[in-house]
Length: 118
Image (cartoon, rainbow, N blue to C red; front, side, top):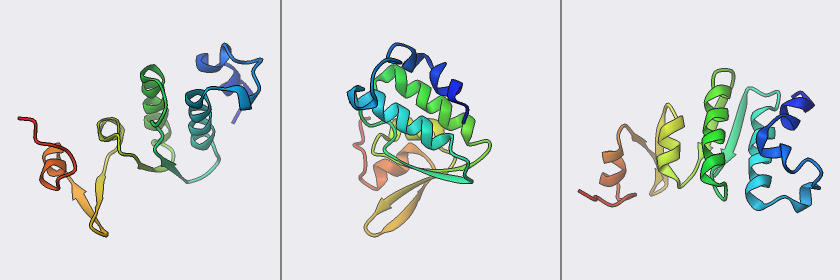
């Protein structure tokens, strides 16, 4: 990854003079996800990439995930199913020791993962 790709990111322009240990939890998480997605690898595993990130930055993370998914496989785990549904192209629910394929939001209701708010 080019150093300017980090430095030109509007999330970091306001904290360029800040040491990493002084970044907020959300800024640190955003940097972590950005670095992982830009590794020279065929696959990347993102564990709860939306956790602790502000809503504005979540949209940027989703864009990064969608952009990078064109060139590498991304395995994403997260309880934030709404954001996962926005970026994933295959969905599975880890349930009772196995993976359950999810086709629609209704499947999440049927497996008891989310409430039925009809």
